[in-house]
Length: 100
Image (cartoon, rainbow, N blue to C red):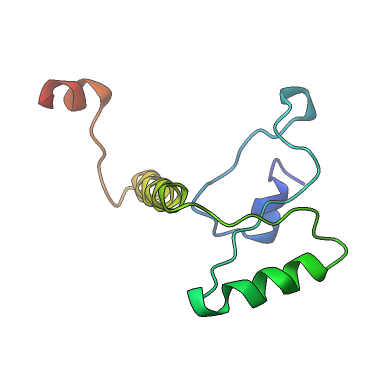
């Protein structure tokens, strides 16, 4: 599998890159977490459909603060991806701390 994680195997363009999901680290539990974006007016129906699927073990709506954090993490991951491609230059920790 050449070091690719399950998520990267299914979503090769993931902005999250590759992670070490060794069972010894306790990170990978054999279950994939999926975020589904549903319009507010369809959320109740969407949750009902997800809960009716026998292979779906848990459904949970995100709080607005969790949603905000998720978007921030996606943006950060995209910046790291662009930096790795040489398309942008990120500040070093020292440069960042000097600005504070």
